[in-house]
Amino acid sequence: MKLIILDRDGVINHDSDAYIKSPEEWLPIDGSLEAIARLNHGGYTVVVASNQSGLARKYFDIDALTEMHKKMDNLLAKLGGRVDAVFYCPHGPKDGCDCRKPKPGMLLEIGQRFNVPLKDVVFIGDSISDIKAASNASAQAMLVRTGKGVKAEKIIQLECKEVVPVYDNLAAAVTAILQ
Image (cartoon, rainbow, N blue to C red; front, side, top):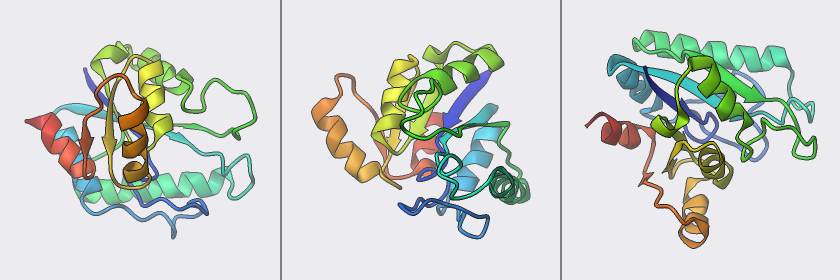
């Protein structure tokens, strides 16, 4: 199985410092949904791994999160694409869970559920916590400059020991993966 893991906010859809709280606020980044459909057509299983502390902060509830993901699924279906699973951490930064990125728990669970060694899996994110989560789970990190990616790229250049490929957006990253 060819598995790829994507962060959600800032990679698939536009991010906001005020949080994405409703389906109306969930707006795809140009080309991201088409990129997911291209991954599907290339034989990839696509999984989302997303911190959703807005749940713990009570900015939105599980029903709103479900509706956001339904919107994503419906828009993808129109393009012949799909996300095979969505994993999310509902906890706040001080809750001490193992699933909140940069901890590897969410990625490790994905690897177990799909029975795929994470060393063979690319995780595409837009933040330092995404890149660290990939490293902590022994997955292959890729960074996109959308969302928080431009800021993260500067930090990665200073802090990261391993080379992290950087792309302008999900569409460009997917083009590189499929070549």
